[in-house]
Length: 89
Image 1 (cartoon, helix red, strand yellow):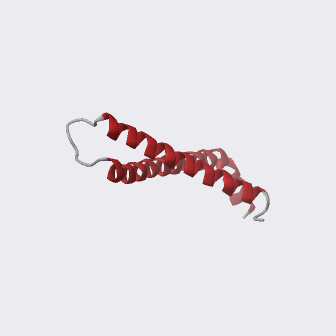
Image 2: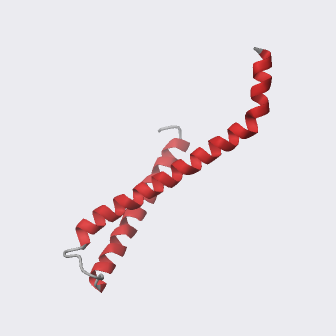
Image 3: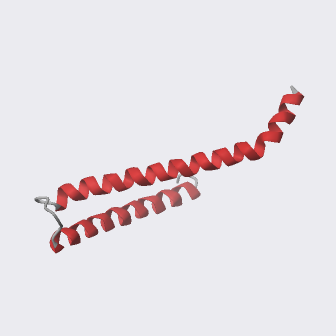
């Protein structure tokens, strides 16, 4: 068994790199899902009738909608981080 532990130790850099790559890919997937969520909600809220291009009102609405989503997400994330740092209290 000790030999297996030693062999695993030899693969640690590769395992660590694989874990890093998986974590990065998960972050990318979460970001992509969040963007799709923003666009779905904001599209439904702001776009009355699709055309060949967006008018300035629709562009402004979409930008404001996404900005609100980002601000809210950051606020919630920061608050959650504060709670975690205080030990859940």
